[in-house]
Length: 300
Ligand code: ZN
Image: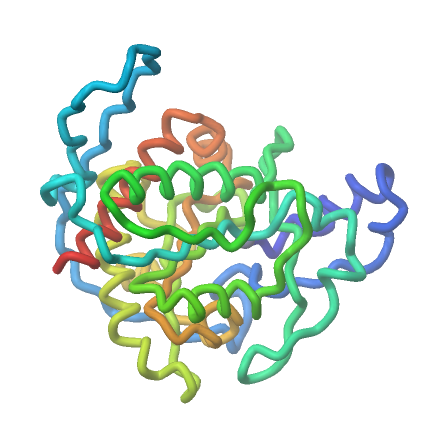
């Protein structure tokens, strides 16, 4: 998500693509706390997690062998510990959104108002886009969960498309009857702030049933990410609530019928966070941490 770098995108891409000269709208990517109605902060427990990064398997070309079961992220047990579980992973934004402002800016209904179908997302100073980051972490996470036996659905198949709209991203989780859904983002907050936070649904009536389980999911994901990525808790939002922030202005949460959270994995506008998020090794640890948090939620 981002609230502050859209102008950056507009400047950058106006030169490259005339289609982008139109006004960019913010939908799901406002900086939490920067908008008056963006929800409330939740008190949160501080249960330490024992997330550990699963060692990456070396690339080998030998014939299939009876491999030892891979250690499950979080040390929760056997390889198939997630068999029967369905997880929907939503990589925020999409790589070609910036070329199609008229498509992603169209308004969609999010249960308590309207918002843009999708947004461009932010980027680091060096130009590493949020869309590329979220897709990379999502594919790493999907592989880890599938290795544990989970059925995993991604809301977009690559980083070269447009959208889907936030309404469809929620609908994919609902149609899959997901046991858990997670939307992965990087934030575009003012550069001095750093750290990650987890966004959980603030009930709007129609989604009240997912508020409690989503909060439990959020706590597990937060605890695992803090120690597993590792990444500090946000210094700029949710600072008194353990980096858990409840919002009612996100279509992805308002329209979800399954337990769902968003995670802002770091602030891409901050140099230290950008350095971590640009590192493939950190992204692998981040994915392992997310897998650990999801596994803890799904198996407890
Ligand atoms: Zn985002």
